[in-house]
Length: 53
View (cartoon, rainbow, N blue to C red):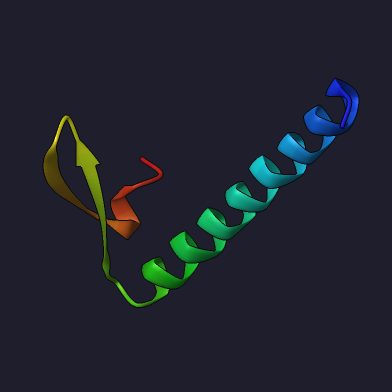
């Protein structure tokens, strides 16, 4: 696999992850739910409706 093909695959994966996160965010906002993240080893919850702000 040459580097051009690897770069193309990487870009497609990143685009897919971005689309999946946007879909998750919309669903969580409709449900008025929370998103859970890890930051520096600590668990953080953020309301989905406040995430874009």
